[in-house]
Length: 176
Image (cartoon, rainbow, N blue to C red):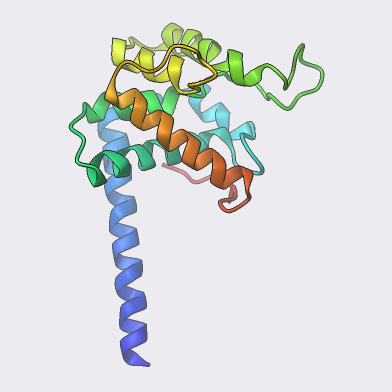
């Protein structure tokens, strides 16, 4: 019994340390984004299932870091994290039926809208623009050009699948 309890505590410590490292990286690379009123407003929009866009974007950043480390893919971590946080920066409720073409074309158009919104608020690098604009590939016919964009695209598909299948649900707002 004591051994099982010790294993559980060890797992909790590892999970806590991993989460702490993620938040340190987010603050290091993207504190301006995290503090932005517009980014914070994404807590009010649902992405898939019950997941707020805010949480989805943080999860995509986390999975992008994990994928790049697991596969040992050298990349610009700062640009990848920033692109992941801004990839769904469309700033509206895509489920709102009063919006013109509210749901049918969202998958095709939101990358361009997110890029436009992010460009108005931040000085974006070419990599960050590529990540935001191409994260919906193959719907965005032109494929990503950099490995960071490929990683974020993969992480986004993974997170979206878990959210859509209700294997990862929105648990409310987590403060950073």
